Image 1: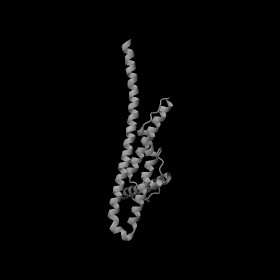
Image 2 (image 1 turned 135 degrees about the vertical axis):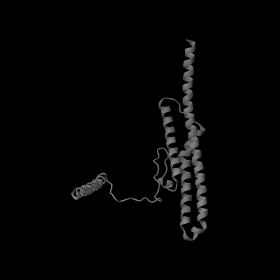
Image 3 (image 1 turned 60 degrees about the vertical axis):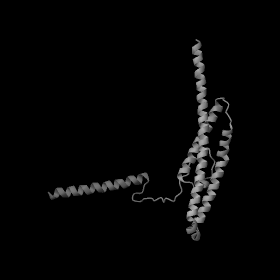
Image 4 (image 1 turned 135 degrees about the horizontal axis):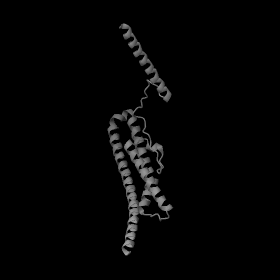
Length: 195
């Protein structure tokens, strides 16, 4: 009986040893070092979005919170969709409509949005420097955080306004294409009514 218990114990330990060695070998094969964890501190900068239409310097995006970075990414994707829509219209030989809203949006995306982000970057950078001074840190830390949050609120409102303008132009493009389909449908119905 003790021989049977000894064999079971040795085989269990052998299986555990082989399993552990296999587990570590698997991790080394895929490039992971077992037993080491990499801690990423929360103060590490956020991953900056890949922008297709907006030409922004990565430095001005460093102080933006994740919500505004996501909103910038949405604005960029919508601007890319709008630009592709206009290019598709031009390739089909249709006249690309121009309006004051389009001109305003183009000006916002190409000039005003980068300026807004630069101004916010300067404000955030200055307020962070003020907060890092030891003798001013206690007296002005609350006013700096309040000022930065109000500045952030203004920037968020400006980005929301820009996104709303872009949404309106995309809706106009969709509606104009839908109207063209309705015109064709009415034309075909009139042809059917005549025959």
